[in-house]
Image (cartoon, rainbow, N blue to C red; front, side, top):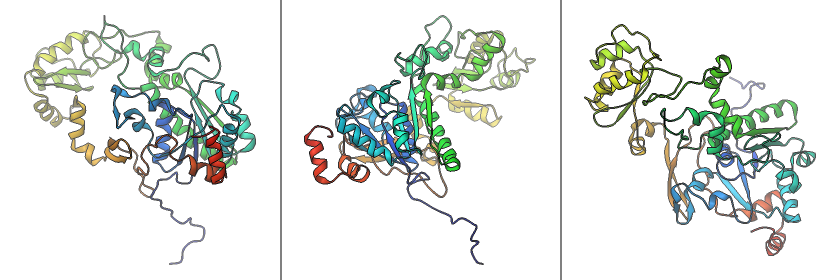
Length: 407
């Protein structure tokens, strides 16, 4: 059978579906680097443009952990990138950036609003030289308005979004989620918005500017709870027991067992109580009992504490009760499904050594993603980037280095 000339030839790639996409990445810390790492995992060529002292996250790390002197946090968010170090306070440094961006598809930055404009490399300036450019700017609280100069940091945004007010037990201080929910959710918004803008550019031939911020991202995460308040004016109090949220009732929550903890989702209370041999709930058929939910939680927990978590899982899962063990990280590492999902992987870093890390979550049948590069050393790719993207000769690169424009 002859090939249909109208049928596109199937393309495959060993680098991912975004192979060939060029991204100029000015981001630092977590939200932006997490986003550009995802794009790099999918094959994009991410050029990390760093100041002479490097990304802030090179000098900070969760748990103050440095491997061979390399920040674990930096290693966590910067694989599949190349690094060039340019002093943006120097006129020649700005000229180099403009050359790099002139051939880029996407610019991503998470400076405070106005910084890129003051440097002379804001959206309008870059777009004039590259009309197809997609420019994604992410900040803390918004690019205009009364809070434009306020600092935007993950915990501060959690506090202002309402999510912290819902977290914790009644009578105790609210507390933040122990992971960077604002940073990471914003990173995901960055990724899908860039992909949408790329699709639009395929139809129109024109790039555009994208504005995001941490606060908007977190407000989308509390959508249904905030909507509940907007539409009936009720702010639910936090429970006194380990019920999962102020907005759901028993049996939804976390319970102590004989040896650890088990999470139980929505399920008819009378059926669950029967499985636990807990009397008194035979006629309560609701899966979402709001009244006396703290007392119900404590009643059920007394019976759950008679068996181990694994024993209860065997009993409850056999009856299709929505339940799961409460895992430590050690438990996550050992779970066989995590291995099947390929969510623990590793790579070699020239300074930090073997680095074990969370794997790539999205699987593509024809253009599989892979870790092609470890997180870059500071300015590791300066020479090759300037030669390839800015048209510099060896002599010009050396002169720029001698003048302190690059490192």
